[in-house]
Length: 167
Image 1 (spheres, rainbow, N blue to C red):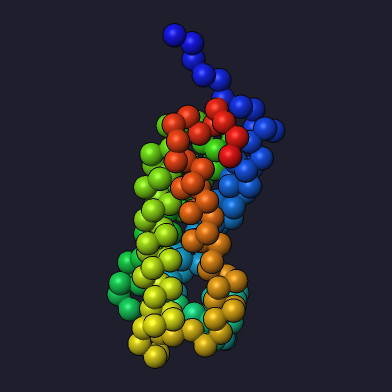
Image 2: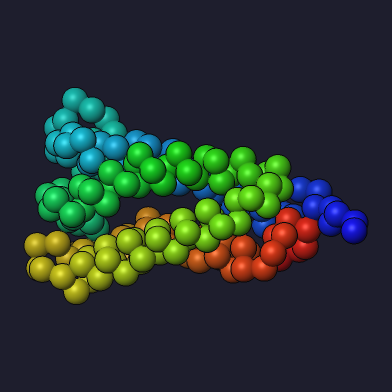
């Protein structure tokens, strides 16, 4: 029985895109979500420049970030301490064509889409008034990639041996 060879990375350009995006997601979550998870105050006059930056984004686009309820701190804690490291592992596996990443990638893409896409988007658009975004365009510009890219990854990982075929 012959073993199927993976396509070289240059023939899997979508995997280059995914690797870049998931590395950026890991960096973003590693900074922003970590601050929120550990309770760094987001204020316009913070000594922490990242806290000021996140405050500038959150003041009109993401009120959940300014005064996160416990469930939101848990969700961003998951993002910072579980999903961010996984995104780095995922990026490595995508570049190297490691087929073992298929099942973990499917779990990640599904869970992040539910947490961000359903729960957070639901609260931001339909939840309590104090947590609703006042700037939907800005909120979507920042957050939609965190749902759409994992959904594309889910489609990429739908068949066995994802690196042995083009997407």
